Length: 182
Image (tube, rainbow, N blue to C red):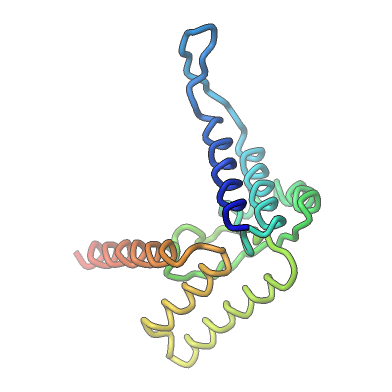
């Protein structure tokens, strides 16, 4: 099963990268400039991630973070795309910030959670756990990493990728902290 998933992901990656490749016409190389509007691009991403969730490769997927206005412009069609892929979407306007991604990536933006079953409730529970830890002044370094790891697992990331994202984001945060002190 893992091998099939790996092949599918490789195929999907190859297919997506083909959109920006060099086209060869009659033996002459011509740079292909595929112009896709932002709305279609975002809906295509939702569709692709919806398929990955539907076939079980991912437990939870995320749309691109968008301004509330941009999300308003795609939400109705995103619901149709989700339905075609047998998944559900949840519009998150207060995204769970963890050590996986910089807070600035979603600050003031909306994200669609793409999921099936009880995954939305698991996400909301994880978000509540973080809020509770903060209220109790227990959101320590270890707790931050634990919440980030749980979120990474929900996103079906391998352990090595979760660790890499946490390390990279912490380095990013430390560099921002150093810059703001000068």
